[in-house]
Image 1 (cartoon, rainbow, N blue to C red):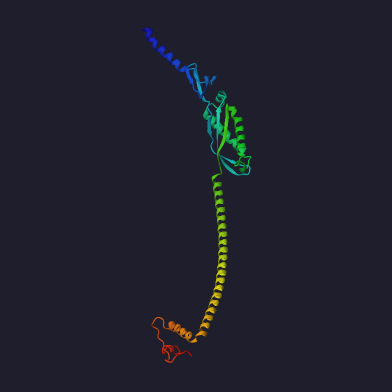
Image 2 (image 1 turned 60 degrees about the vertical axis):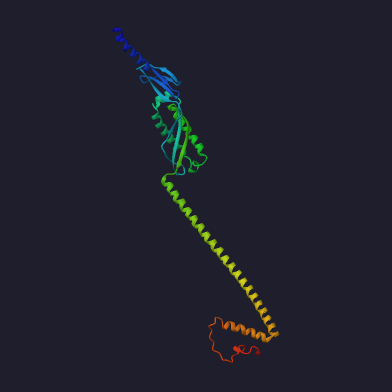
Length: 289
C-alpha cells in the first residue's frame, strides 16, 4: 500500500518532467535555449529537442522572410518639392542570438527597422530632385536605401532582402494646387481652341458667301445674256412673222391683250365703243390699220 501511495506522484513527476523538458522546433522556426535568461544554445534544424525543465526556457524566432510596411513619410527633395513616400521592406533573421540580445523580439525589431528605413529614405531621396525620383533612376536610389538599411540591420542580426516604394504621391495641398493649375490650363486651351474654331468658321463662312455671290452674279449675268438673246430671237421671230402677215400678227396681239385684260371673268372696263381695243369684236374680217 505504501509503495502504491508513492508510485502515482512519482509517475506524475516523471510525466511532468518529460512534458516540460521536450519541445519541438518547426521548419519555420529557429530557437534559443535560455537558462535563467542566459543563452545556452541555438537550434535551427527542425525536430524534437530537450531542455532542463523549470530551469531552461525556449524563445522561438521566425526564420522565414518577413514583410514590413512602414508608415508614410514626407520627403523634401533637393529642389524643395515635397513628396509622401510609402515604402515596404522584406527582412530575415539570420543571427538569432544577436537578434535576441539587441532587440529581444520581433515587435521591437519591426519598430527599429521602420525608423531606420524612413530615416534612410529621407537621407537618400532628399539629395535628389523630384524629377529624378519619378524616373527610372529611382531603382538606383532604392538600391542605395537598401544598402544603407542593411548595414544598420546587421547589428540586429537581420538581413534586408528588399526595400521598395509602394507609392510616391504629392501632399494633398500640392495635389489640389496642381489639379487647379491643370484645370486652368485645360480651360485656357479649350478657349483657345474655341477661338480658333470661331475664326476658322468666320473665314469659311466669308469664303462661302463670297463664292455664292460670285456664282450668283455669274448665273445672273448668263441669265440676262440668255434672256436678252431669247428676247432678241423672239422679236426677230415676231418681226419676221409681222413682215409676212401684218394682219394676223395684229389679230394675235389683240387676242393676247384680251386674255390678260379679261382674265377671271369679273373685269369691268369703261371704254368708248369705237375704241381701238374693240376693233376685233365686230366683223372678224375687219382689217387692221
